[in-house]
Image (cartoon, rainbow, N blue to C red; front, side, top):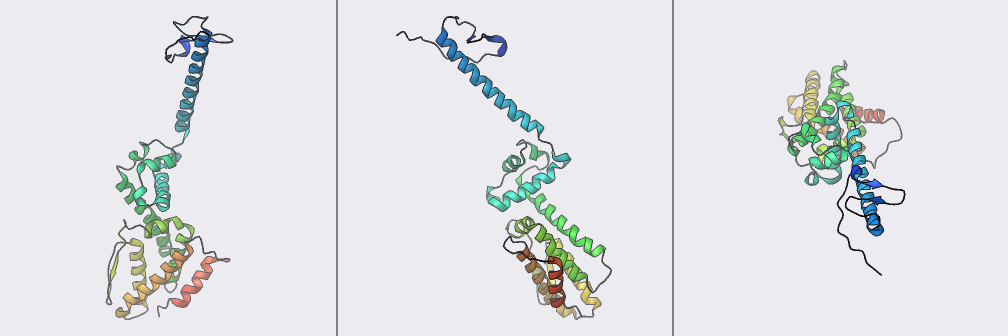
Length: 258
């Protein structure tokens, strides 16, 4: 049996290939070398499959909308989810891009590096939290209940967004340090706590409480509110009822500003 000898075939474009009903003819190959033509046909088929696959991927990438101009926030939310799943050490802009199904270069249009993205992720969560708390302050006209309603908003925010609680309070990268003594709370790098503290101090002054009690009262109130938030932010605690009514009842019983 004769064995046909042949060399590796180059990939040809459609214009260089003459197709018939049963086989194709490539330049420099004779029509009667049927076995070579079959090999050439297989190479052509693989070439077409690879090309079509490439085009499909390109179309997918081109068809992914830039989230109506909100890609930056989409990247931030994806980054929060990735860190909660895998930790900061496994975090990268490339992984965020993959999760969002955008090009690896896309995140760099919004963040110069991973560190900037991390900072903006923290700022993003803190700002959303502050917006919720400030809404209570702005729309509140009853000084005696403002701490209760502020506490309800605090817990509700993290109960509705447990991913934010895990992200902010489980990462050692973020400086949320609160410094205090028996006399006063002297330092905090966490704006929501500062808002909580200032509001509590204002309420205690209006209630003519001794300033010597301010520090311990604020920490006690914050521990109660933050503790409730941590409980309801876990997926293991479910309350069958109106959560905010339940939390409000607890806070009214435990927070005393008179």
